[in-house]
Image (cartoon, rainbow, N blue to C red):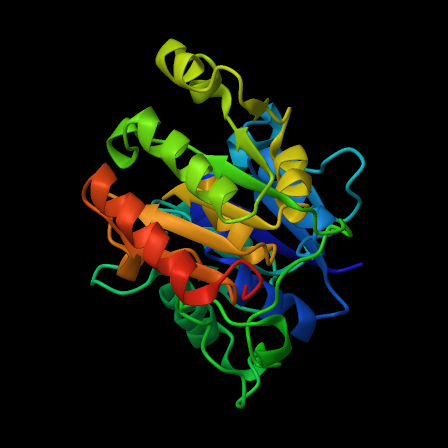
Length: 317
């Protein structure tokens, strides 16, 4: 089968911001097999959610010649990933001209789109990715297709419009536990651990009888966080797919600007994302059940979350 290559080597949140564009393009090219090249863990999640058909690691030794623009490898277990089989590609690479030229010379019948991972002007990254892919493949984006929704206030399930960008299902049943992620890829994005404990108390006060904390590898090793979360139920998913299953089963998720928050948003989990030093107008979590809040300090974060919960009520997500 002819194949279409998707290359993204960046962080989880950055990869997720490409998903609305990727979803639309994959649906418009049903006869092509979509291959992902990047971080294996993230690519496998994309396969699980129907965005890709197979993947290979960007760190594989077989890919060295590919990224230097020398040759297209024949990958074991991936028939067709060879010269002449790849009909098009999206390369989300800061420096990928050599790869793009290699694929063009191999006989690709569709565009080989080299797209810088981030926009040069201030705009939401998800919208930027959508417009960039649309510009390369205009005939494969329906004219009536809406732009991907820039984050908005949560609305009841019954009022979610059909035009809303798709949420991806893992088949998990929505639970009654609330989930809080106190970390991110940068400590500058995080508040003091006490803030998240206060948020947990606020949720309990509002009827969420079970509140869980989810920790990534970095937070799990933080002794200060461990002290503050003593006595709390703490989850440490073994991989990103386990994280996704945990989020998909939550009745509400609270977190910082992180890949985990972006994942919760696209899974359709009611999400409140907190932005301390980054700009939600650029990096905001996407989704129909998402609220992004800009809060420069812990007191502001607590107050804004309270106001958010006051405005929507526990069952209004």
